[in-house]
Image (cartoon, rainbow over the protein chains, first blue to last red):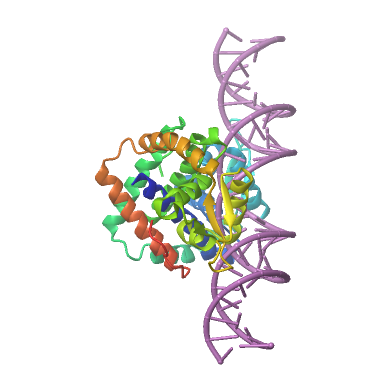
Length: 153
Length: 153
DNA sequence: ATTAAAATGGCAAGGCATTGATGGATCAAT
DNA sequence: ATTGATCCATCAATGCCTTGCCATTTTAAT
């Protein structure tokens, strides 16, 4: 059983990246970049931005990996890294640029369309159930390596 | 909501690969290789092997990607590719070698241990629910790109 | 003032995953 | 026998993800 469960997780994740990236390919983006932009566009992060550490906790990826993604987003002019004046000098706050915010606004249409298509056969209740189970699975897997859950999403 | 659901899928999948690969790192394997070995060790595939096409349908990955994984497994002596005598000459049957079968038998201990730890907080019923929802999500995502579900797992 | 720790960046290696294009071998249909 | 489709492999490019190690800046503790 566990066998098949993890195979489904593997397949579903691969398909999510494949079809998701396809859905936003018109913007030259990928699902991972979309995740970063989505994190930065949240009201809580819109003005202040997020530190690299916060983004790592939010997305749960390695620092080296995130750095590479941020490099591409910065190169594309969607994101900027700045040392916020007055704050802890070690911190770099990652923020959406104006171009990044505008691009994100455009992407939202394709993203909503993608969500609708992907979850076409799901009721709201089923979405919640799946979310909660994945949430717990994530926590269970995270516990296997001593990761702190960090910021809720 | 869909937002958070897919983020959880992203996080859970990454953690699965990270912790899973760690669990079988003693054998020099990865989660993907483990998935291939698991597919080939099933009774249905034990003697006859599986064609590349069947493996592609089972795992739902691209041919180019699977070829690379098989190359590594073949180089490690765990798997062999053979043109089955008498059959369709185009087909290559991928089979576990004796060393591959023995290694898989050893890995099973670590794998069962990993499954238990990862699903520690889950009841059998919850596992089934999660499996079914992931199964449907996979199908929904697969429909977005015209993929045939192929062999059940 | 020295020392330790935290936050970030850089470099490198290995593996996974996709797409695209090309080619060869085999089978089936005409 | 030619044609077309299928199955497999290869080369190439790009991006994601991890691990490990080293360097820098800044903060905090002693």
